[in-house]
Amino acid sequence: MRSILERVGIDEKITEIIWKEGKPVETLNKACEEAKVDLLILGASKNEALFRYYIGSIARKISRNPVCSLLLITEPNKKESNLNNIVVTGIDHIKTKTSIKAALNFSNQFKAKEVTIVEEVKPSKVKTRIDDHNSLREAYHEKEELEKEENKRIQNILMPLQMKGSAKISMKCVFGKEGYSIGHFAEIWGADLLVMNSPDKKLGFLDRFFPHDLEYVLSDMPCDLMIVHPKES
Image 1 (cartoon, one colour):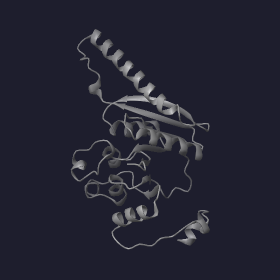
Image 2 (cartoon, rainbow, N blue to C red):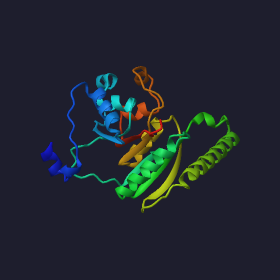
Image 3 (cartoon, rainbow, N blue to C red):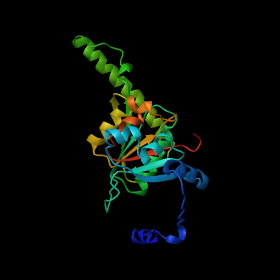
């Protein structure tokens, strides 16, 4: 372990190595709570085989009931990792402000080029039923209005934050299932890091049969994943 620290340039004097015995998930969570850890970093495969997905890997089990924020690295063997493009959730949720702040802090530290805030809107919010050209135009107008409302909400979040650094900050509004939409967007957008809120409740075995929100991303991670768990949660 000391040779690994030396090889990657981490100062041993400011590093504590802790050895624990026990089941990995419970032991890691307990160690994080005892040490008051802010961020736990774990390696995780991008795609999880069907059987392993339902049984659950260590990284994904911890992700479903985090005691602190997590950073899941999908390609730990890469010698160098550029963090140029960050995608962060912009859903209407009390935790979102903390996630956006964490994404902006990361972008500053790693000199990212772009941070994209993705506002996921459920298609059911568009009330107009499309059955002719007029209703199509009306639905399009309704989507535009929803997008304006979402952008205004995000701008209100960004306003009090001190946004330093040179990263370009943009907003994208997508209509679709929460979790699935942002995961697909991050993959198409070529994101290096996806930042999401921690789950509001402990995700159980049945959630894997009926995926939603975070489960969509955990089943097929498009890139490195940060799950932000506010201290007050």
